Length: 213
Image (cartoon, rainbow, N blue to C red; front, side, top):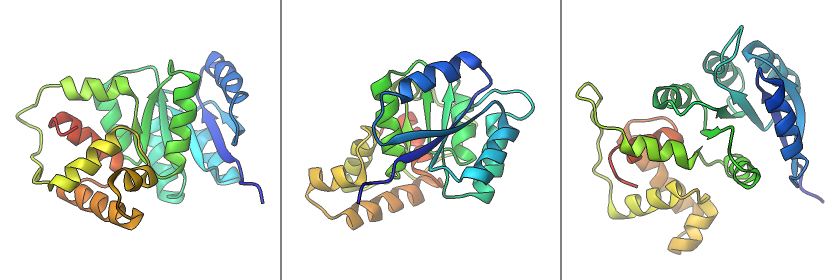
């Protein structure tokens, strides 16, 4: 039996973005663009109707932005993975999207290969950030008003975190470290708990800001 394609919905308020994305998707194998929308309200309606695997969504849009739409969609459809798509390299926007349930963030000017790899990585349950966003977070100085985190990670947890930051899947990490996938998942759960976050993508942000990766 052939594997089912990864079902994608694209939501963005710019026609040109839709045109470019449709062209990019024509090069992908095993990925299907099933619907398109122009704002957050349409994103909610489309998710209700189609139940996609991944929602590729802009952040700044009229009527309802991506942040607000993310809140509604995650509350109703927690299994839909939301990947933020934006031209903004704004760290606050990144954190807000991740805090509200997005599993990753990629810039609109990413290459075809980067977008395809990101979609597959997100589909496999990994959080992702574009290299540009990760670099910006690593260079951002610490603020005295920022919360403190328990960074007392074990050597193995740090090792797994670095592999995770490189975009490797659970399977790839398990092979690289010669451990089981369940062990990888156990360590990632511990990392998330120690850092006081709810998602893997948020863990990556904190790790980057504290020079752990």
